[in-house]
Length: 185
Image 1: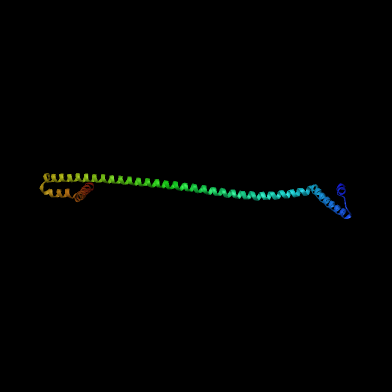
Image 2 (image 1 turned 180 degrees about the vertical axis):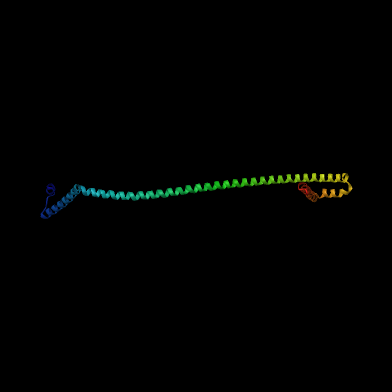
């Protein structure tokens, strides 16, 4: 420092005072810097406060990132759920359409089978009716030629209207069975 004062050369007492003040000020700053460097506790506190601030900022940033990732995952899951729902709905409709078509086919087949059975029953009925008519004519012919004249009208009536004759015959049969089973004493 003496070199500085000597090199610049003081030109008077005022100038010398100013140089001393400047040097004091510079010395004070230098001492403060050295004291700051020597204050390990203070520097550690400042560093810890810095790290706390950075950790707080990182926590806020991580929370924000996590929330954003959660929203994105929720959106993706919702979209996937909609796709699955749409696929299931389409599959359900296809199944329903297939079942409806199968039901219509089964209905048509049953209807055709019913018509065939009805036609066969009609044919069988007609055949039976024709056979019965033929048998009736044959019986009438036999009654006309083989039954004695007084009984012919009764036999013809029985052939034409068999129900009353069957009822009378059944009643007669019951009377015979009862008389045979429970004889008078």
